Image (cartoon, rainbow, N blue to C red):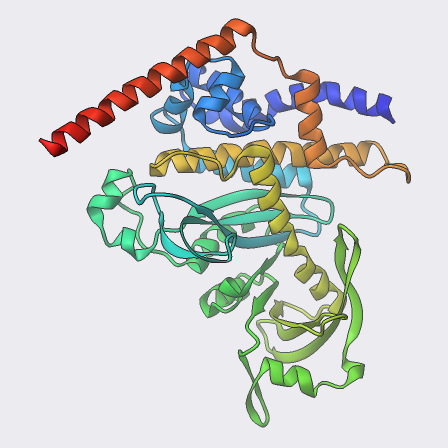
Length: 430
């Protein structure tokens, strides 16, 4: 098995070069920035304590961070075309069978108020209201793998109502306020052009939005979207809260089914399905999930253009957890949340390139699983293990002179920053 892994690993640097060449390079105008993009994507997968332009440039062997900063700020790069190329890469490599698109948002806690999109708002990552930046992402999942394929930065009204603030961070004039479900609809529409038979899953933020559900029904796209226990369903006796309906269901209405494999085995729950409505557009249901230990309930609005079995809806509901894994791996492996950029363009580019880096290890993992069946005495190669091996086997460590030169650069830059700070302080006090 080690020999097979060794043979496979020798191809990974070539595959990474191929990815950057086919997905990123066509949308960069100059060869110098193409080289920088390759260095940045490779460095994003390195096990660095912090990932920003300084640490990535040092790891890549650059003498200063300016090339990385130029790529993120001023280089000619078509972000929309790059996002489309990333979608095409992931859909081709992960396959178009049994596709579920999962939409969700994640928040990055930030200090200060000048970074684009930062405001006091709820962050699901922190579980409370924080000073943070929130973005909506779209994950592409199949039964065998998953990766992030699109993103939208959420701008609160405190930003979109302040034209001067938007201009200061380079937000394009055509950008206006959009809710998270509206951002999700944009990404889903773009993805459905590649995979029109995909299902869609999401949490309550998206499941409780009737416009998003109507859009999916008009596109005849099946969905399983979480809703609140207090949402009501129309019955012959009038509207009834979903949590009240769950109590009224007999024991025979519940079936034990797995929502998919987790870290500790299959995730078994009790499930029940209630017909909501059927017409020429399709079939709608309310899906209920009950924890077999605690009895905790969860509820979903479901739609399909034709009848499907309960097991199919359960499988789609279970796939929603994949986006959490994508966030965890994207942040842990490729620094999705570690950007230290303030402007609109820099955030877009950092996030896109981080998603490209993460997509690479996700695709490598699936390719190796298909090529080499895993024996019972081993767990399958993970994205984390592939990234670790890629660094351990192929990373070129900087020499002593390079390390010392970076120490001098950091200290000189800090000295200039300190002098500027003192001058501003003296000007304020005079």
